[in-house]
Image (cartoon, rainbow, N blue to C red; front, side):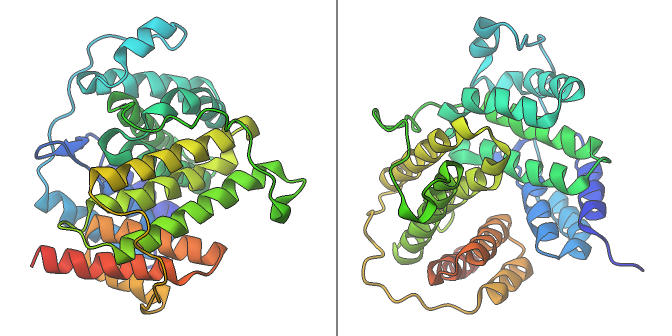
Length: 324
């Protein structure tokens, strides 16, 4: 049998996951589309169908709430009233499906990104993470991207329905990026560079701070990494504000989970090579391990740093020990 391509694996996974609920248990998030995309992006496309089937066997997802009322994207009062209302997730996804059918996906993203960005912290940033994986899937699919566009509608709709403004308000007076000699004359690159530094910083923190549960603080890494994945597709004016919100959300998580912000100081980071760490995560099969390890490989490729592999290696060990 011929090996699956990235696009084939994603189309098959998204078709299999159509109609599967957004959450299970007590508001635990459905990671299946995100982890499947991470596996496919890492060259594990042949593993995706089996991983999806295994996930569906061990998770009992809630039914999606029925659609209630149409959301009018041109009426600010109407759509703002529906933000953060999970009972209207079907209304949100339906609205985004119509928007994506009428306009280019980049236009829809540019229109809604600044509206949803202040609510990035909702359900530990899973709205923006699912959106980011969907964006990469849309780009990778080329013209045959109907399933991928539907997944983008799902990501944006989930983000809107779990919108939370508890964190993510950029500090006043930081509308413009500071001067950076490495990117002088290249304003758009400054936000990307700042996000890269943020992901590296929180990878180091995650790798060195003892946690009672290995999963929650992972999102202080995967949240800004998701913003980094999308930022090149955003208008330049939206990029630096996106970094500021991602930074503030990750900072807030340190307080939420009792983690000191300087836990990585003076640490020598030791871990297997980053590709081996991802292979271990794929073998474990845990969706959080897979997504964090994919971030580690992606960012190590951008700028090699031992903190990435250390964070993913720490997560792999912690998750295996916690669920043993």
